[in-house]
Length: 488
Ligand code: BGP
Image (cartoon, rainbow, N blue to C red):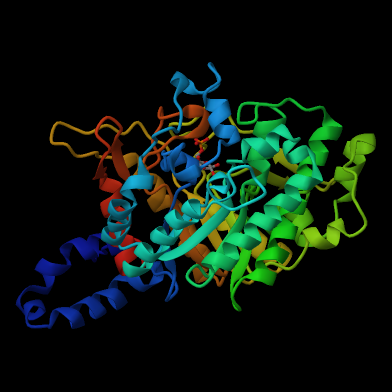
């Protein structure tokens, strides 16, 4: 019987089997030969694909009282006893405000070509509106210069949940004024920074900060609003996005690009057959009705309005037009399948299949492991809304990272997670789904909101007592992927 090697075995035996003749081949040629014979080309990402990392201001910066920064709702919330695991707070966090140069150097060492970070609104406008604080902007000026000097493209997010407390005191997202204040701030920042930052994300994960901050109250500002007021918050947040897109366009350099960074509910067909795939596309529109669907389609879906009934949002004349102002790209944060979806003859034409009790998770109870989410997320967005540029603005996982006796963090679980998710992303790009870049959450361990410092998502391990950063094993994996622009 002839011996047949699988591709993987072939790679392992390749060097010895080729013997002396292989050593005569120049290494570059051998690599090219290997790529063709071993099928490596099938694992590549498109040329120019961006490999980035992501962070957010309150989670890493610290320096909460420095250089004129005003308080945000997260300062208030974290200093309210009992709200955060271990009563942790972001007063110091990763001290990135003082260590940003080291952190940019780490990005360079990772081979990252892009960086998604957020701008702290209360550093720029300490009271949300009024006179800007020049020292606040100076920090981001220095950061941008440093990133560019190290070959890392800056992708700022304008709102990653740190609303100035002064605006919360005047009603927060319950008032339209906050949406207008956000647009003023966004336009101001874009005017100042668009000479160097060419892409701006408006708001990070509307669905998360609205629902967890205003319905369940486990995030700042910790509210439990009744349905009508909650729908008004949802609407004002969408309005803030649309007004900001317009303000950024009006005030930035020509060619500046902007779009959202939303954690859509990713709808995965339960089995990949045409009827379940069609159901997953319909579910994508329905299950994201209060957020990305409204942004992309310019109206609230009938089913959403019918369910809200008398509690539906109050919508002023031009609001939906503003909300659906054309974006240049769509950013999506993808961690898990929102739903496994099957076709159904009953209204609404699909069913969400329940997750089994012991479905595998990472080190956060919500973080279900579903690598195919990184295929179906961008694939559905591209298909359903005909989007031509997509960024994966966050993906990554929590783990129980701890240094071994030799000081190394062997996070093989994170490498497993990434290898499987990136395999699905590569499947998407190889089919022509227009994903332009990937931002890993996170560059380094940081203040993970309600979990405080109790769980870790970084490629770099942070010792919070010394602020020392140490690359984990997953950082080596990520470096190899980024350097080769393909899976390893
Ligand atoms: C996303 C946020 C990030 C990050 C991540 C992990 O929703 O945009 O800021 O925190 O999730 O979530 P968590 O910190 O809640 O575990």
